[in-house]
Structure formats: C-alpha cells, structure tokens
Image 1 (tube, helix red, strand yellow):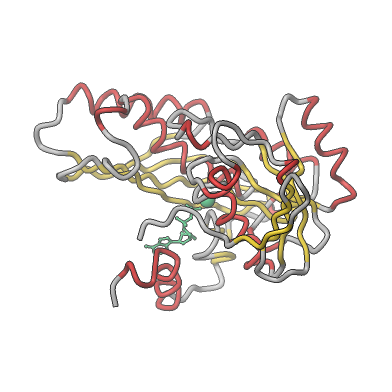
Image 2: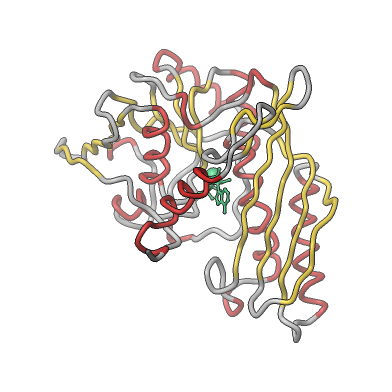
Length: 298
Ligand code: ADP
Ligand code: MG
C-alpha cells in the first residue's frame, strides 16, 4: 500500500497503533500538542511542525523573514490551541550547501524575533545538509491544568466560535499566533474544545467532532470570510485562527468581552448530535451535508 492510499491521517493512525505510552503521558498522538505530567498545577505541552521549501513556501516569493516567522508561528499556534504558552524551542534546519550565510542568519533572526515576542527561549537544535530548506521546530510550553483544552471536549449544544476571519488567499506567512486570544479564553471561560485551523475549517472541525463523538452545524450567514467563495474559505488550510466550542449560555458574554479586549471572535454554528456530519446552512437557508475535507499532504 502507498502512502497516498491511506492519506496523512491514515498514516498517523498507523503510527499511533505502534506507539504505546506510560502514565506520564496525559495525551499522546492525536491533538495539537502532547500533554505530559509536569508540576502539581501544570502540564507540559510539546509540539513540533516542519516547514519545507516548495511545499510550504517558495524561495522566489517568500522572504527570509516570512520563512523564519512561519516556521515558528505554526508551532506557537498549536500551543495556543491547547490553552497554554510556549517556553522553550529547539530549532532544526536542513540547508543546501550553496546557501548564503547571510540568508540563514536572517531566517534565524526572524525565528528569534517571534520567539522573543512570546517569551520563548531557543535552547538547541540540529543542522544538516539538505537539497531543499527544511525547518523543524519543537516547542515546549506549559498550561495550568485547569486551562488545558483538547479536541475531544465538545458537548452537544455548544456554540462553535472562530477567532479572526478566514482569508485563504492571503496564504499568510506573517500571521500572529493567537496566544492572546487563547489566554483570554481559557482564563475567563470554560472552553470545551479547541483546535487551530491548519488543514482547513471543515477538516479541523471534523477532528473536533470525531474526537468528541458529535456533529456540527454551520451557518454561512455567520461565518466571517473574505476574498474567496465560502466553500474555499471552509476548506483552505494555513489560516491559523482558533476554532473552539463553549456552552451556548456563554455565547453573548464571550463575544462581547472579547470585543472589549479587541479580540475578534464570532459564533458560527453549534455542536449537534448528527454524529460525524457537518451540516451547512447557506444564506438562503438550504441545508447541505459537507465532508470534513481540507489540506492533506498525501
Ligand atoms: P497539527 O496540524 O495540529 O500540527 P498534525 O495533523 O500535524 O497536527 O498531527 C496530528 C497528530 O499526529 C499530532 O498529535 C502529532 O503529534 C501526531 N503526529 C504527526 N506526525 C507524526 C509522526 N510522524 N509520529 C508521531 N506522531 C505524529
Ligand atoms: Mg494544530
């Protein structure tokens, strides 16, 4: 069997079957971060993501700032999705032999710049020869036990929210990970489930409903998107907004309190009992069942 036949998620499931963890692991494979035992009040969060030349960016239309920024931002975004903050980073790079030293320095400066903005120390890494630029970053962070949010806690009747706006055409190499929004949310509300939109809203909502054994309903008239068709907005990856759910009784207070802190949050639908299905209601009120599709590597 080829990888393209089982897909990225099929492969991850196979890997998860092979790995077995000890009780120090609160959550292993299957969420935005691994969650590990740490102190009395806190868990350690660990996440890693890799960006590769010609897959995630092209040298002829990305600057060194954008490459470095994106490499670390995607990781900080996963920490935000679990309700925590980043603390330490390990940065591994693969580079072609003929690469200009100045270019590498500049990539590193931009990694460091975003790391410092979020008080993350770069504490190590690895350097290798590679045909194309590869940057793989591990971030270790922490979260108060009471603030941990996973993908599996959505409850039927919850309101579904997103931060910001879906703007797929921007293919944003300079987005700011939503740590501020995440900290605001987990410190002020009981957030039942959360994920960052890396594969596309439908696909990532698909993870929340399958992990939570529920379904979802989305209203086109509520979804903030720009520049493309609604279907594209829902299935385009690399948006890095947070998608989360909380009890519906909190909806108005959550949106208005966030607004006062200049954090844009919009209620876009609800968690339903239509197990595994996302029901989409368009502007004219027509219902359609959508497949949780989005970006897959293979
Ligand atoms: P995200 O988009 O939030 O970064 P991914 O889709 O990359 O999440 O990964 C989903 C889950 O699968 C995560 O828990 C991640 O740690 C795990 N995972 C992905 N690739 C591997 C791998 N090669 N080995 C072990 N776990 C993996
Ligand atoms: Mg994620």
